Image (tube, rainbow, N blue to C red):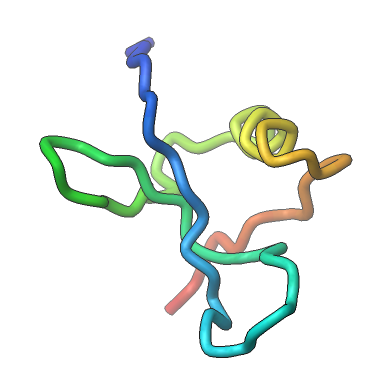
Length: 69
């Protein structure tokens, strides 16, 4: 598999217009070439979700949406 070290990772909140609500869901983005880009779910695993959730201090992941559209 492909391994890439990424320094800039963020969750862009799905409901970012709501103030003072903790971000618990949204789009996972990484900075690539100075631009923020969304991560797609192709090849994404629940283990990937557990790692990202752990990075943000969440106890675990919920099942990701495999059909967002």
